[in-house]
Image (cartoon, rainbow, N blue to C red; front, side):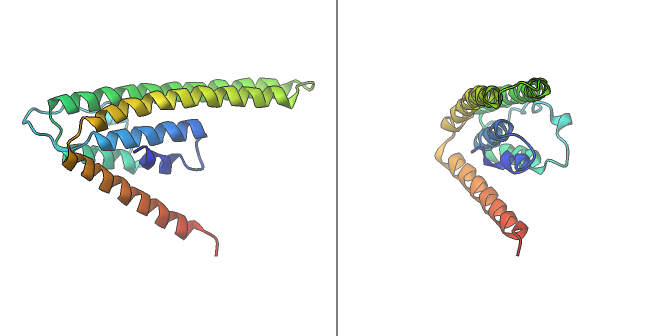
Length: 174
């Protein structure tokens, strides 16, 4: 379920941010099923900040609309989406902190590379914990979907995986 945003993160972002992005994508897609009520959905979190150069966010918004979530499903979706955006901000701040710490350590001529490796390991463990929490929020959304909605999500991610595989094939050196 986290797969779509990983495309954006591939090769550009650290594994922590890529995993977070993937989690967001998966959970967003899972909770985007058909709405069964006529209640208007509140505006998604940070919709104005979603740039057109990140097409997966627009695709997830379309999936959300296609899923036609009922009120309780939509509430779960919105909470997961909001938490995910907050987590992504936290991840960005953590990456800046990590860069600064590592730069400071590398400035010391007497630094032992084991110290740096240990810091990287600590950052990775912290990131895995954050990603697990985000994933659980989105899986709660997924669990609230009916069978038809889950099938829509499965097809969405299958299509995203096929598109990613196709993109990988065209990028491979010949």
